[in-house]
Image (tube, rainbow, N blue to C red):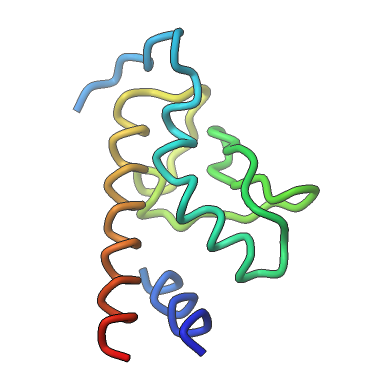
Length: 106
């Protein structure tokens, strides 16, 4: 029941330079925990990566579109920019805070 409620909450739900080359997974890491939960809620495997251009999580052999709020209002990105990374991290943190509030109420 809590997972369904979390899915409903998720459904409602500064720089333009590229992230340093030595850490190319920064954007995905910003949403990995939330991504794992989302993929599993939709019946897929855990998240494996993020397609920047379409803002889709890779859940095994399936893809899950992230909301516009997660990917800087849905704009396409060729790579992981600092702006995208920061936005994904902020969104991921907000979703985890919502999850905690939901769990604390029950």
